[in-house]
Image 1 (cartoon, rainbow, N blue to C red):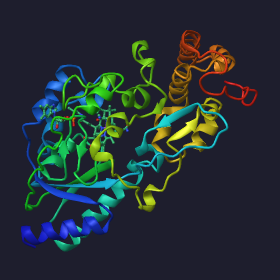
Image 2: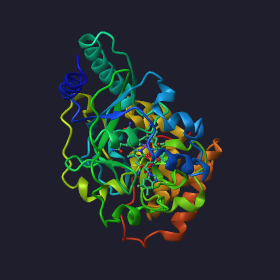
Image 3: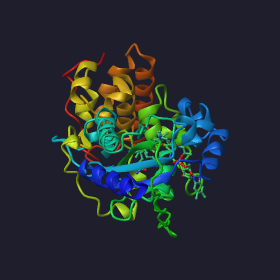
Amino acid sequence: MQPEELSKFTKEKARELGFQLVGIAPAKAFPESEFYKEWVRQGKAGQLEYMTRDPETRADITRWYPQAQSVVVCGIRYNSQKTAGTSPNGSWGRISRYATSRDYHQWLPKRLGNLLQFLKAAAPDLEGRIFTDTSPLLERMYARYAGIGWIGKNTLLIHPKMGSYFFLGGLALNRQLVPDEPLPDHCGSCTRCLHACPTEAFPRPYQMDASRCIAYFTIELKESIPEEFRSKMQNWVFGCDICQEVCPWNKFSTASQDPALAPRTETEIPLEELAHLTPEEFEKRFEGTPVRRSKWRGFLRNVLIAIGNSKNSGWTRLLQQYLRHPDPLVSEHAAWGLRQLQKNSEPAGGGTAPPAPCGGVPPR
Ligand code: B12
């Protein structure tokens, strides 16, 4: 197949497989990779050790797959609807929207693999390698050059019709395809995302200090969350969507109809339920979703911070119970939560209704 025909075929097949966005970039390093190297040098990766390992490879796809001549980048919309769990009380923990369905690492590589198989069947000398999230690549840089969106000031890839609530993945191919043109940047003078971030994770437009991001704290950081950020984390217990929620390009985002993305959990869950989950119940409650990545102790740490920020003195007894927990990560965050509540609790009758007494599951 000639490059034109193969490019057209690739895009058709990707759409048939459920990708709403697909484009082609040349396989080479682009100027944006210098921003990434600078980001690593400045320590903006925090403890994301994998982001600092061998920056030369991450910056250039041909170091990861030397035969690469083209990069096919695909985007697939995820659930972007807010949903609430039922509870008589009003204190909620928030989960980022991408995490409400089955973990994309479990099914997206297979779908990209199917695309590769179709291409191989159509062009016998074609070889390729799939990527989604975990490969050492700057996916958004290739997505930009594949023309499927622009890199926004919040660093997310934004498409004019789909906003930013989508995953990226793709194929590096040993075949020359017809590259697409990058889309122009439509952020204009808007700075909503930069100002909305409660932990001030954007030192300047288009740059994130990952070591200040709520998603980094609640998902990636396995240890104690630095105290200076805790009171700013609001009630996020896994991930964060603030810089996407305020983005005008997400105003019209629609729900995913893809069966792989069927919701498995709500975006807002009563803290009362979350604070009482045993490790086994946690695994079951969030089975198959990315939430399990935080592990029970990390998740409980996040929940204790959200409780500390709830201004609801009804939580005092539960926090006191967790003070005696043998894991210092848990007891230390419970102590912080207590201090925070003592400082900020609403007077009786104000704020949210207190949770039911925690006689249910004893904290471990
Ligand atoms: C590490 C990582 C994180 C870290 C750091 C995020 C970050 N912004 O770097 C943390 C844990 C915080 C994180 C959070 C999230 N992540 Co994440 N994450 C990644 C990962 C693995 C690498 C990102 C990376 O390369 N960072 C390094 C920095 C330097 O790169 P960058 O931010 O893309 O910066 C580019 C531009 O901003 C530009 N640039 C930099 N400076 C400047 C300056 C100027 C003037 C200009 C013009 C450009 C420019 O050049 C840079 C290099 O291309 C990618 C998957 C992958 N392999 O690429 C997923 C990925 C970026 N994450 C994703 C998602 C969904 C999220 C969350 C929404 C999850 C959540 N709800 O909690 C949040 C969003 C936070 C945010 N605003 O980015 C998706 C994003 C999809 C999209 N539409 O963009 C990806 C692509 C995973 C995937 N395959 O779908 N993530």
